[in-house]
Image (cartoon, rainbow, N blue to C red):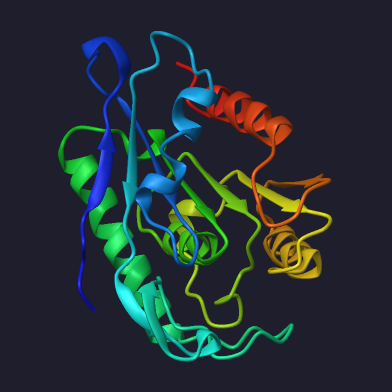
Length: 222
């Protein structure tokens, strides 16, 4: 599985980064898909937040007739069980974890690193964050599902990880039931989780952008 790199957005005004937010895109997109989100979050002027938007590798996707496209893993069927290629998903999560370690080695406190993901990217973010060996700052799961809930090895270091789960009430791609199931799974495991529902389809809406900006500001406040 190739690793096509990532888009890195440094803090405005030349400020040195002392926090990092990873945003993982959905199926068929790339890191640039969430580039417009960054300024829309309206983080404080002095926020030293580096955004890293990785690109998924190109893989054949079964539900799309085997067409090769940007994908974190293969989706084998679109049922509510959402059967996926878990080894590919875990490999993608391990790649993200390696990028997180690079940020820690560069001097970013792990507790000021947040993982966010949309759709497929959210499933990878669940796996990467909850199995990471050092305490992180938060997990944002957008319009997604917890694909590896049954087999993940949870890291004790992140047992208190704050988790935000966002989902659209009219999502035709990832039914809201899957988003709620992911939220209920982490809540039942004792994580401090919050669920937000938005009147939208498989997308990101303006009110959600406001909420994300506020949440990131809270999580990364000095």
